[in-house]
Image 1 (cartoon, rainbow, N blue to C red):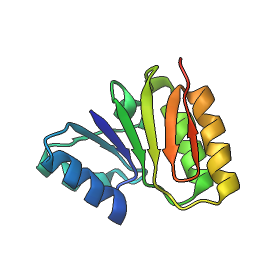
Image 2: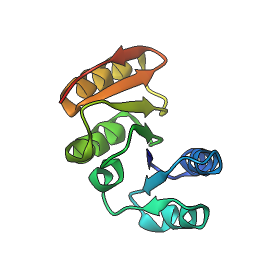
Image 3: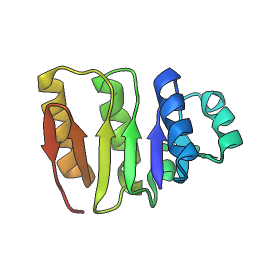
Image 4: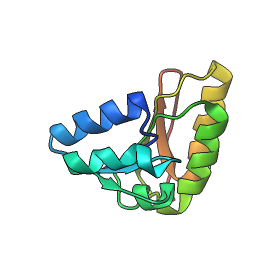
Length: 122
């Protein structure tokens, strides 16, 4: 199961491709209406980041900026499992990537980004 948090242009396209590959998708967006069209390709549209992340093996964030990513991942925390992989796709600075990787250590997710990696257990 893949949770896609943020279904703007990039998140929507990634969620559609993931669903087309036969993987389960749960989608969340701050504006639920932006995520609703993904139901047509089999995605479960969720009301909260935590709901979207519950039971997901991978969490993909496609959000506006580092601050939004950090806030949404805080909201997602209770839905994350002990070995959830977090794929962060928003453009952030190298320092921002390090901050998000640090956040992954206390949100119980393994973060993967071009400039940082972290592994944590819940």
